[in-house]
Every structure is written in structure tokens, then in C-alpha cells.
Length: 632
Image (tube, rainbow, N blue to C red; front, side, top):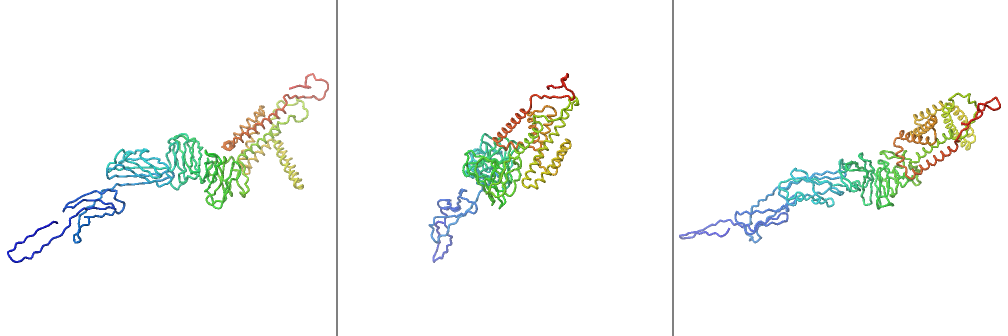
């Protein structure tokens, strides 16, 4: 490079000289280009052996392959000039190392991020994109440095934008993250929205499994509820169960998709489990309040208008179906079929948010109980036949009301037959002096059971005779034959009933034997036992000489209630729970009216004073000992 001079000395003649040299080109204005980003390494000419160094911002690097171009000079060299050359040494420092783990459940998603910083970093930030589109809140967010203590990230140091969580680590740490430090971040996003309180998921449900998640109430205030609408199955009707408190939960389902699960009786520290049934409720507008009275294959739903008001149309979708089978939306309260549909996964029904108890079941089979909440007696409302003609549906309180009326009527009939007549039975006059002492007590107590049984037998014969007469009206010949047989049966039955002990043994033995054979249902055994106890109470009060109508009704009522609860635990509680308040008031008023009329009539037919007279046979004239008359 540059100019050079050569000299030669001669004494005469000519000299041929050969000069050899290597042409070189100086390096001028070297520059590099990384992924389209140019960086000038040196301005001007580099001297021979001179070295320059520069640092390229790491932002120019990209994941995968990178393209690097080197440029020298500015293109002013002649065509025969040699190309410029330079030795380039390229190095890359260690990059930040990041590790991510992910876990999801029915209600939550959890990310664990570990970030090792190669250099001291200001404005360090971690971005977590939650996989679910239904994340509505950050349940917890913590960080630690180099395996230290976990610390919570305050709300001002993170932001949730949709499902993207940005964590500002430098702000949370209070400065630059030191070089070589490892920062761990764990974040939990929730698909449920908790209002007026806080909860912790203590038992999660894996994705794809039937929902059965347990939560603990960490804090709560009035209006506490959990919105499960954003979850994967948020359209299904949810309900809660708990062993910590009486669960009276209900869901408010809104037209915008929110489903708010309220737990009014819960308190801080209680645990509860959340489940859903395979039924969806979708208000067309407004909202609807739903309480799941019975889960399982034939659900029962207590429907009420929501806080937004009544009259909102509601569409129900029932998913636990068999294709081609007809399903019924039945109103237990009104005893009518609200809607029906042939299932094609799902069955769809149209109704509204009116206050009533609804049930859903297959039209071709009776309702089955697989989860509690059945009626007082087995559900009497079932749709039979075509749904175009609404099927007969009997309210669940009607059977027990009928039993009470039947039992009460039987007691009244028996008591009136024994004690209702104000006229004493006609009997031959008897000399009181010829009657053994104490015979009155034994006769009355011994004849009481006999008269009761005879009264019952007479009632039975009356029913049978009435049936025979009806049969005679239909077919004279058959009626006469039936009436003759019934008369024979009447005579035989009265002979048996004349013997008190034989009648009692026959009645009790026949009843128990029929029960053992399964001919008498369990409810009939309960009813028979109650009536038997009432008869025994009546006899006992008479035996003790303390009988009065009021006392009998009081003790008989208590005995009946105790017997029903003992023989069928929970029956009375279910009955009272399902009986509307208005109907309960009407029934109570009717019972009081019947009792008042019965007592007044009985007391009116009972004389205040009983006069007895005895006459001595065989002589006339007056008697000195006063036996001709007396008042007692």
C-alpha cells in the first residue's frame, strides 16, 4: 500500500529489471447488517492490523436462524482493484433462560414461570397468556427470587387484559433484577367470579370429569355469591351441597349467561361442593331463580321469578336423554304437562319463570329416584298417553290428605257407634240387689271392645251389602246370588265378632299375614297401625274412666303423629315442606271446624243428669225403704 522507489547503478550497457509486488486494498467504512438492521463498525480506513469492536442490540436477534451481511468501502474501487478483506469474529453471550409449566382444572388455570436473567435488567416483565378464553379474574399471583420466600404481587403491579396477564417484576421487586438471578412466578386464573367474598379451591375437578369441586369460604359479606357462568359448563344448572351448614342454595340465571350461585346460610370457614345437573336453563330476557330439589335422571326444579321481575320466557334443555324417547316437562304444583319433546340430544322445552315445582322425565317410564327430593309419597304425577291430551297428574299432598280424612272418618264413625247415641239400650228390668258388686265395670269394659268390633263389622257389612245391591241393579240374577252370599257372610262374620278375642285375633292375624305376603303395602300398614292405636287410646280412656272428646282428640292426635313419624321417618316433614301455606291453613281450619261441630253435637246429646229407677216385683202399695225411686 502506498508508493515505493527502486534504484539501480550501471557502469555501462543496459540492465533488465523485474519487479514483483502484491497489490492490496485498504478496508474502508466497514459495516454489518443483522436481519435487515445495519450497524456501522468504523468510519474511514482501517490500518493494517487494526481491530474495531461493537455490540449489536439483542433485540435484532430472532428465534431460529439469523442472517448476517458484511459490507466494506463504498463501491469506489476500480474494476481491477483487489477486493477488500477483513477478519470478523462474531460471538453471542448467554441468553435468558425461561421455563414454563401449566395446569388446568374445571375452575382454574395455573402457570409456573421460571426466568433466569443473564444481565441486570430494568423494567423486567413476564407475560402469561392464559389458554382459556373464560378466565375472568386472577385468583393468586406470587413471585420469588433465587428460591426465596414467595411474595404476593399487588394489584398495581400486574394487569389482566382479557386473558393476557402482564406481571411487572421490577416494580414488584423495587428495582432492577440482578444479573444471573432466577425469578419464579406462579399465577392462577379463575373461570369463576366471586362477589362479596373470597374462596379457595380445596378439591379440584380435572378437565373432562363430571363437576365435583370443593371450595372453602375464606371471607364473605351480605350478597356473597359465586358466578359460575364463565366456566366450560356454565350453561348447566349448578347447585351446592355441604355438611358444614344447612344448604339452601339457589342459582340466579341471567339472559347474558351469568349464573350466580347464592349460599345464604353459609359462613366463613365453611366448605361446600359445586355440582351441576344435565339440564340447561336459558331465559330469553331478564332472569330466573332455580333451586335444584332433586338431581339425577329425573330432576325436580323449584322455579321462581328472578330479581329482574316475573314473566320472563325460559327455554330448558335436558341432556340426559335417549334418542327417540319422548320427555315431559311436568308441573308438580299445578298437576299439568307444561311441554314435551322427542329427544334428539337434547330434549327442549319452553316455559316461563312462574312460581312452581317442575319435573322432567321420560313419558314411557315412571319417575325414578336417584338423588333425593321425592314427594311425600311416590310422585303421583306421571304423563300417560299422548301429550296432546294432558295426562292425569295428582298433587303429591292428595294421597296423605285422603288418608287423614279416611282415618279421621273411621274414628268418628266408630266412636259415634259406641258413644254417640243418647238413648240407653233397651234391656229387661233387673233387681239391682241381685246384681253382683262390680259387674257394671267389667261388663262395660268387656263389652267395649265387642261393640267396637261389631261396629266395625257392621260398617264392613254395610259396604259389602251396598256393593251387592249395585251388582243386583246391573244384573238381577247375579245380584240376587251375590246378595244371598253376602247375607251368609254377614251371619258368619257377626258370629265371629260376637266373640271378642276371636275377632281381635282374626283381625290382627289377617292384617299381619297380608303384610307378610306383600298384599298390604307399607303405607297401609302405617295407616292400620295408626287407626289401631287410636282405637286402643279410646278403649284405654274409657277403661280409666277419664274419657272426654277433647282429651281423646288431643291424645289421639299426638299418638297419630308419633306413630307416623316412627313408622315412616321424615314423612311428616316432607308433607309439611311440600304443603302450600294457604292449603295448610285451609286444612287446619277445616279440622278445627269438624272438631267443633263433633264436640258440640256430642255434648248436646249427653244429658247432664242420669236418673235410674228400679221396681220390685210381687207386691203393691208403697215401700218403706225408698226403693221405689231415687235420683243418682
